[in-house]
View 1: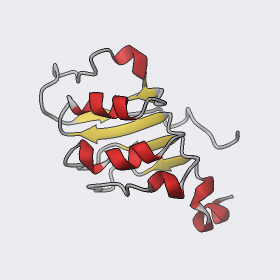
View 2: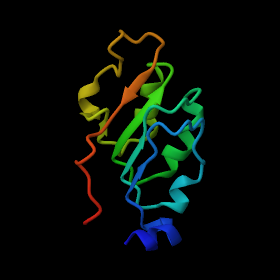
View 3: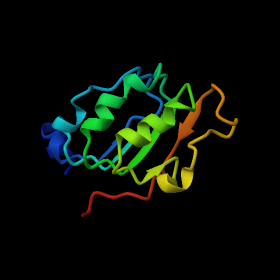
View 4: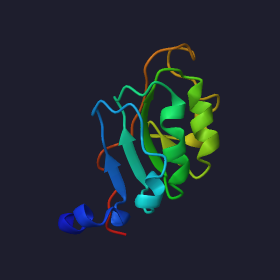
Length: 123
């Protein structure tokens, strides 16, 4: 029920904020949205992992994540901080091995995405 979500974000299971010029996420996001399983914050100009890590850590139900970070090495930090995470960039976290970007781990935009139809609120 979209009306209820507007009044009560605690029922939200997916949060899609792709390309919204966000530079940080609220550190207590999980307190307000405890059921979040999927977050898509790809293509936002986050300056680094510290701008999103407190929020991601607060989301204990988070399983699937889209995220853009300026340094590929920061992926390890996200994976370590969110042990319940199942997919990052549509790939199983366990298959990411060294968590390097396609550019060999060098600085640059690293985009993680999850298919837009893979997750539903009908649990």
